[in-house]
Amino acid sequence: MKKKFLQRIGVAVISGAMVVSALAGCGNNAKTDKSSTVSTAKSASTKSGTSSAATGSDAKKFSGVKLVYWSSWEATEPQGMVVAEAVEAYEKETGVDIELEFKGRKGIKEGLIPALDANQQVDFFDGQGNKSNYGDRIINLEDLVKEHNYEPRTNPTMIALFRSYHDGVLKEIPFQFRANAYLYNKKLFKQAGIEKAPANWDEFLTACQKLKDAGITPITTDDAYVPQAFGMHLGRLAGVKGLKEIINGNGWDRPEVLQTANDLADLAAKGYFSELVASNVYPTGQNTEFATGKVAMYCVGTYMVNEVKNITGPDFEWGFFSYPAVNNGVNGTETMVIGGQSFAITSKCQNKEAAFGFIEKMTRGEFDAKLARESISISADTENKNWPEQLADVKPYFDNCKEIMGNAESNPEITPALKENLIKLYSGKITGAEFVENMKKAAGK
Image (cartoon, rainbow, N blue to C red; front, side):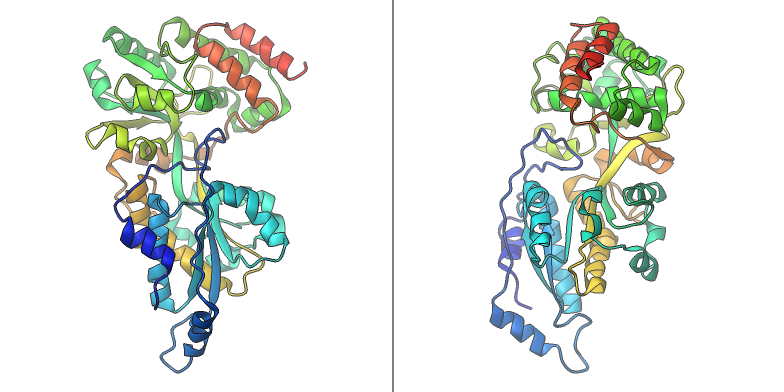
């Protein structure tokens, strides 16, 4: 089969040029994504030839079938390059003709729904998890999942999460998972005499003090990620439901908020945060403090490992631990902030079996493992046991996750005030009580 122009670019010309990727759904809206679009459209004569060739007993399963696939990746990203390889392999195996268009995060976010509403052909797409805003533009996948016996090889907690986005119905297939909590530098922990990752708040405080005593700054963050630790700490105290109620309902006067603010203010008072935390604009803290080995811990998603790999190099000793259990908490390290990207099939698709077949190829076996390896991410296929070395510490926590926690950024109207006041809290400029009062004022209370 004739190779597509895009695949020649993505696989042959720039293979090995693994550009740092910004994982959208996994990342933060503060990041800027390229929205370049590359199409693999074939000429009408080529399409016609493909259709006429789909005759005879030796015809492949999907000969004559044309699918349009919009991807949220760029052609030059590790993820985009693996996708291009998977498309080429799937075409050769099945005879399907896939027009692959790399739209980037912005292209999917801003362009896909208008395209579907204008009756443009887009058969399936990938992007940030939780596509509930697509409504009936995407289809129920339960029957396809059952027919393919797909579910047994997917983390059950993740499947439950993605069903929850659509009132218990599976309408998107999760892949390229991520976990959010503390990434840390094992070399610095060893220098400070810390032998194991902290499991509770007292152990966390002890680790911070040992790092400080060894002349190592314990924690840093950036403006884009300041809500991460706050949300996890609050979720430990208020529970998954309580966290959502507080953030979305502006329940800033609840006692769990004050305890969270006081606990984090205590970190600042003891000198555990970087002195630069007040001025760090993403990705300053991530790139110039943590990735260079100047700071020991950073609360963020596992996607950061891929983002900073050109800075850390191959010798960086990556560690990970779930957010510690806190005093008076209602859950522990088995409750985590995890998520992922996902595929969905549109209601425009005329050959759902062919589209699902590609999704299965991309999220199982060889290409799932390759995606995890090249982008340093978490496999979707539970039979792919060999995670990237940098994420080895994540696996036991991820496998033990029983409940998924949201984050502190689900209320866009209050997020700017939350970030502003958390920066003040982490830099020691306000107390826990002042944080609460500031948030109540921001919410109009």
